[in-house]
Image: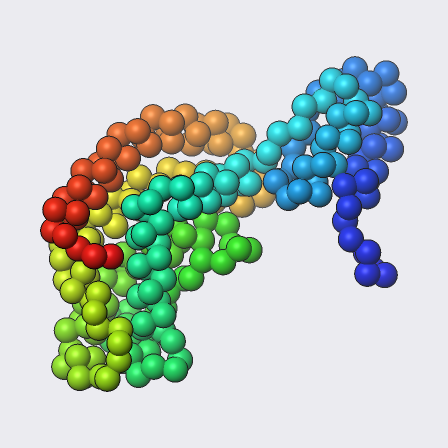
Length: 234
């Protein structure tokens, strides 16, 4: 790696195999290895399975939760639409090239005592979309104050068109229903990200998520239907 190499599957697998052979020469003790879902380490797990036939490779809790969020925000059309709209708000109010940014900083400082911005999702950030929506909901009051100011309305910008959506209570009810529904999975993500022993808590959180998700997703559907009845083009 220091000479510019890459962590190929064979490299990753051979970091483990010598120790596994030493601890289990008969190849009848190791039955499970856990990796994240990066392609190279996934293949490393398959290589280990070839050397230790009893081994099954599984995803770690952190990556499994991340895959869940990726699926939710790419395959569920209403949530994908909500995430895109949230990103649009970030661009509108935080772009350094536009005057709304200065106004937004001033208003958030009045509300919170400091300039508080959005958390834009990125590929290297676990559960980035959920964090983005949580922050959006927290910034509800300053966002509404900004878009109602005459200063903002007088700005010569193309960003004004969809801001009427933010004035509708149905939008914020839908947003709250989404972050509430996904919060149990976010707790799993945070627990796994802490990198401390907690398999007992992990099992409890997973069982709670299994129990709560169906109920809360029905709530999300009801609020989405209410939002659609308002014919809001987001």
